[in-house]
Image 1 (cartoon, rainbow, N blue to C red):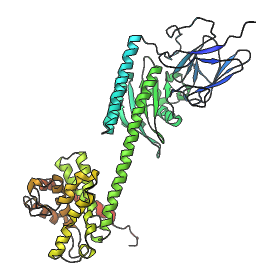
Image 2 (image 1 turned 180 degrees about the horizontal axis):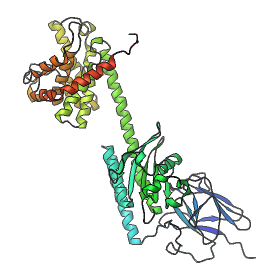
Image 3 (image 1 turned 60 degrees about the vertical axis):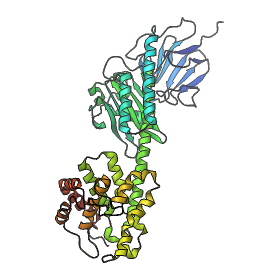
Image 4 (image 1 turned 90 degrees about the vertical axis):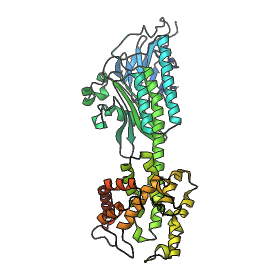
Length: 500
């Protein structure tokens, strides 16, 4: 009696190290991406346990979908369970196999039958080498940028540009996922301006499927996939083939990379690999950006706590650092300073009076005017603050305005009697903001001035106390500063009926 022929599944994706799958009579094997699978294939388009192959005693082979994200297809038709015979073409995720029993001549990728709109990766050796080199160069360029991480937005735009050059999709996007709210937001989009929110995005259904499953979703032909038959927005947009790869961080999904084509050939298995490579870079960038953002948020909270600890000693100066910061930022924007400079000013503004921790309460809280010795003691707060913070690398650029916000344009200020442009620009801006807030705030020995009178006194001091250019900037944004003050003071008022 002749031995029973075995069924083998030979990979058609010849460019990858995908194994030939062999099943013997009486065997049942699980195929998937997870380590628990009997046959583990490291491909993000596969579910952890994607399908089960079973060969009965009579030689009949059955393929069963184990609830995978991308399903199994036999000769172009999606199935949940199907018999596999020699000559059948089986697709799982983005991987394609040809079933044979070892007796028929081997067929090449080019000889395999075309079915439906599922595509195979078949490239001439020269073209294959060219594409691989371009992908490698693009991924290496992105890696170098990631190592020198500076601007998250620019990096994500570059990732998407390089992916677009390789895959040539009609649309592509990097989307950020907020696990707390479950919302998706575009961080980079091609073509630029294609949509501004995911509500305008025709294939959000596919994105959520990928994020929920934590697996790549690959649709070679949307029209033939029953999962998305009811997603009318996809049909309306004309998307025919789709790749969506989740961006996975250490604690879970943080976004998704999406690409679609409206016609022509569908995405090939190699395209899924390329998309996965770029998705890994985008995930690292987003996670790093989030860490920076979280660190910055904690840092700002710490600065605010320091500022409030000073103001807690004197209820008459409550909110002073916050207001000075806001006024200085308004002046800086009118002066044309960029975002990095604004951040330096923000840090300095919150800490400009930190040196008052070294001033005795009898001086700091004195209800009347200070005598000369007390005045000298009070003025030392700028040098105390400078010395306290001088050892912190992340505050180095903020130190000039922490030390110099009481210097005067005419050289009669303290602590260094600097004049003119020898005073740092940030300190010149903060000098106006600090003086304006001091004049409009109540003190134990006097009531605060009306805003218009304080503004008049600022405008009377160009070339004396203040830099004339900064006074000009104040004149241009005075209305904004008045609005900022009104809003911040209103926020500090207790609600009606609140006991204070």
